[in-house]
Image (cartoon, rainbow, N blue to C red; front, side):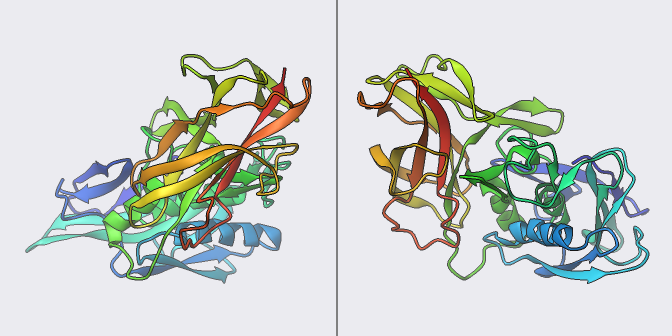
Length: 364
């Protein structure tokens, strides 16, 4: 979300820098002087006057999504009561009346005094306390980007916590530091926010790579659709024709965007594939399934599949995958085209629940 950057009063020259899609600030434009925390852990104090019960759980869940990254850096969570304030030596998470839905207020320093001094000093995360409808639920029936009418607390916390570790906005690729509202792993009725490949790569650029094993491939039914200022814009993936020259006719199915698909034809469902880990994964298996509901599982009918030759951990890929629609599906009925990545469970992953996604279709 949009937020001010508040720097040291001494001379500061912050220059945005990127690698692949992640973005951060560099002191004096020097790639060896990245604006980051010293050490590999900092505490975020969640204010329990602002967040209690399920809302506190959601705030913690948003921070935990950032902690699932392949760098050694993590955010230590704690709670506090009482007053809050910026530049008080504490990193706080609280609700207050502000114009944007949320923001991260960052106090950094970058100056020369007998040598360069640079780093992050404090970050406060603020959510708007007035005029917003928030939800603590991961149910897509509550989420306004699906069939609900509320903004998920955890999604915006994850975005702002990306700023906490030193990441800046991204508008050129699918990324939680862009449109965080439309950045979920969704299967069935649950939509989970997550850090994602590009922000995970940015965490490694800032803090290095952790020594322990960290493997995680995933798939989402969201994609980048463009840019809105500093932010990437996201929309749902599509079903394309076999020549990949046109999108099939759209239709709303159970409140979600779907497509009219003719049985017996070859079409190209689109999915966004990510490697959120620390090393390239080769020969990753996948299967394409057709289901009678929006929960994709191995018990559904497998209608195609194959292998992704190489998935790099710093370059999101939205791909179309050709698949033949069976002739024996019922005309006029709704189905869900799904994918399962790492279908053979060959990869020892830190999160295996993000390997499935779906697109609603209606057979004609």
